[in-house]
Length: 318
Image (cartoon, rainbow, N blue to C red; front, side, top):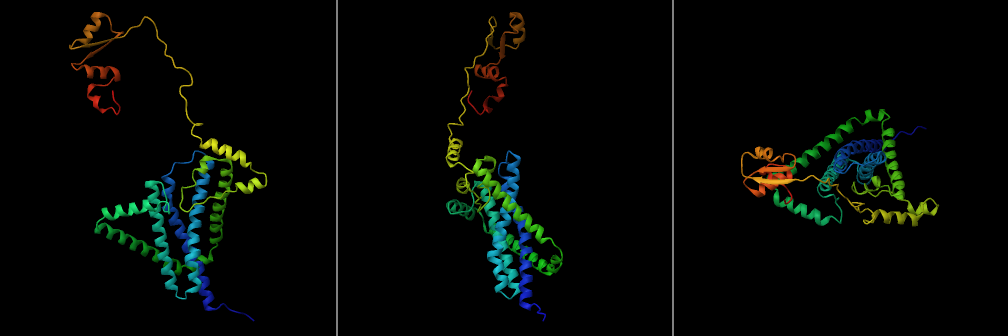
């Protein structure tokens, strides 16, 4: 007896596969937006730090986007029978989510923080400043920009729905999914090692991405004898102790050698023939002649080797 799939099962299967491809293309968009975090932060100083940065970036952003799909969109594929409603809801969720990601990225570039409960006051202040400075034309442009962005998501959702059978013929989904999963686990595994060894090129990236909680396993490693917690706390205290990293300069007394018999003479003259006077007194190699009617400007020129017109440009007192 051959049992064919019911129309509802076929629709759910098609919607589920469509949702995965819709999420994949939004992962690419989210990676583009989240590149602001990477380019606005100092580059890691080691190759391991750079490798961790890219694996953590790709794995974490893909994980956030996929979790959003699983929580907010995938249940609709099973509960809602109207395909148009599912696509419209998915497009709205994607548009709002990516807009929030863009806002968080701009906040991170400007202030170095993410949208959270601890930064609520800062977000309120930024919102208040924006509301006070933007006129109705600017607010209209922002609303229009979001409408355009939502329209793009709707076009993407419809285009993928029409071509989902063509995507199902190719076996791209499994390698792509394995790549994102590998980046996610490699990033967290590398962070476990870096956290146990206090490897700063990796540890200092902990707060780079939103909703980022890199894995640590110090207690588990200590339980199986792979980490000495007492030694770890001691090394951590030394790294955080500012006195350890203070520079005492110079390490030795600094002396300058003085050659006896050489004298320097500073002569301030109000004459146009200072060079002739130097030749006449035979002080060409031992005297400093400044032809300037202002003693302060003359001393400035002799001290810094600059014309007097630069006297007021120095950032420090002279």
